[in-house]
Image (cartoon, rainbow, N blue to C red):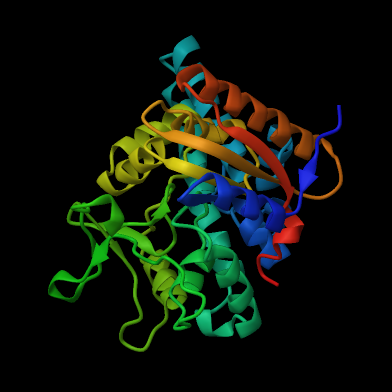
Length: 341
């Protein structure tokens, strides 16, 4: 049965009639709309990991039958567990697989840094105008992306249209440090899987800022050269992601806020892969009361858009099982949002 697809404007108008608060969850499609460099295949092509891996990176991606780094990581970590289960004495091979998984995790961050725009100033003003227009309708913004595009967009010095930017970071002693909010209204932007501009130091979550004449990308590259990696959740499967999130107060808080979400929710550019099941479970948590769900579908009907459609329908069923009033589901054409103009 064919699905009725609205335009983004139609979906937004409907959401405003149904809910006082509208939130947004962003996936990789948000970044791909900015540049094809953020597509999984492009990231794979740019990656340079062969000198650190036990086998070639092409062999790993081809074995996983995917261009997604996280899928490769999942295969390596799962294989290591199986070897430990079947032959606990063979520590050498299991250790090699775990080491290679870490190389792929680090390689994802290094690759993103390599293809990333050099600074916020290199992005066209017209793109910022378009993306801020898109973001201005949302009271809370959640993202599973690691890149700096959202961070740059919300922090532009453009008064109109207003965009939420409270991310929970304060500047005690001159260092941008995350503090547990006193009230929910104190934080409206959440990097659910961490991000390139976030890092941990002395058991605190901090973020890079323009300092000493160097921009964030330059600081990030310097940190990578010194072996210091940002706070990002690159674990390969749901259980590992949940465990990683549970070890960090910043990540845990963002996840909990998603479980308590009320009003309408737009899901834009999310692939609904198995790796993100913990995110969907959080949306369906009975502590929240999502009244309407709007899911973006990209391009003509395809296997991937069908997967998103079925996963969204399953999400509504999960919400229905836990809530007295299940959310209304609406699909919209992602391209009509013209996120980056």
